[in-house]
Image (tube, rainbow, N blue to C red; front, side, top):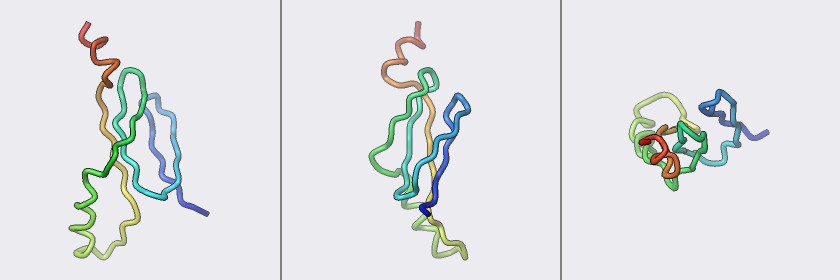
Length: 77
């Protein structure tokens, strides 16, 4: 059985995906759309502190919240 990672969208709904790789998102606070990031901006952090910890890191999550390109003009009105 493949482990799952979960994330909660701004409406409070749980979203699940298999942990085949770390996925990171930017999520719009107005329309609730999530857009995946192309690469992980914090991967190097896990690599840096992994050797100094007696803890095996399997995955991590990261999500940024803001306004997407479509919703940005709406928020300024």
